[in-house]
Length: 335
Image 1 (cartoon, one colour):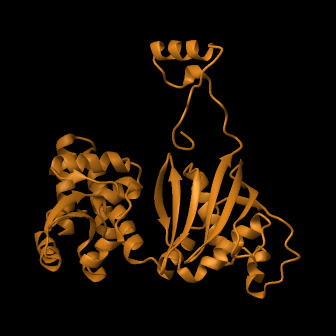
Image 2 (cartoon, helix red, strand yellow):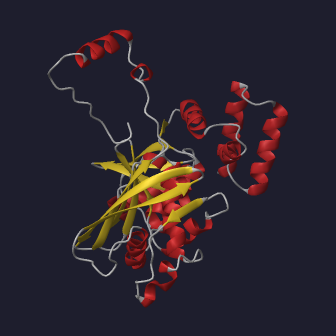
Image 3 (cartoon, one colour):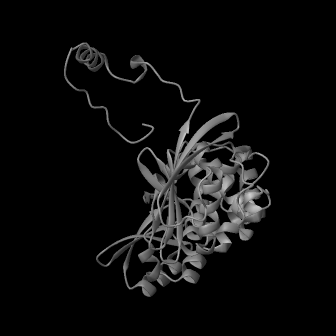
């Protein structure tokens, strides 16, 4: 059935005349060789932007598109669809209203697999379309929240992850199980994970990083323009080490786990200096941490660059000249 969806994508591109015949044949051959979708090859080669390709496919296939990058999946729905079936059938449960289950699929024409999911869940299925790579990442995020996912995250570390952390003097810390962390050894999994977490947050222009412990999981979320998006799920066993590493970076007391603590440190990511303010507090499931990212290279822009129309700009400037009153400017951090 993977071939059928590839053929449909080829037909769409041919009809829309978006690629010449030679380039289209090359993409199709590469997809067949790598046993992946044509959509993945098109994005990897830079021929299409992900959202643009998803929108085109959804419009031509008459299926509602969904971007799973920005969607927080409901962990309760996972119970409806076993891990083995979800991965074998490439189906991610998205939401449920009554007896109608909305599922994200990369191939809405695979009737056999959809029937299996319909029988297993006992629900009518409403299909939404996503791309294969996005679907696979969502499956890993929902069904592999432990060590396997963390190993994949560590695999993303490469020479481009240029992050220099300016940390405090660690000589007075004597906790033996944190030796590699306090020494700043780059091969420590915890240090790699924290570095990658901060690096990705800065790269994605996130305003905050939330490290949130729950009963059996730890969730890391980035806040962008007021919206929190889940990015990692490190194993619960690493929670104390991750929080301790963050504490060490801003000279907090790693032995204190009951009282709230606040601190600050600076990182440099590819020439960008970023101040990070840290707040650590205790919860019933362990310590949580919130990191606020403040980019020092951010420059203020003028009133004429805010995109106001002429009437609004004139009215705003008139109000600014008044000798009394209050103007409230509100919105998500970084907006």
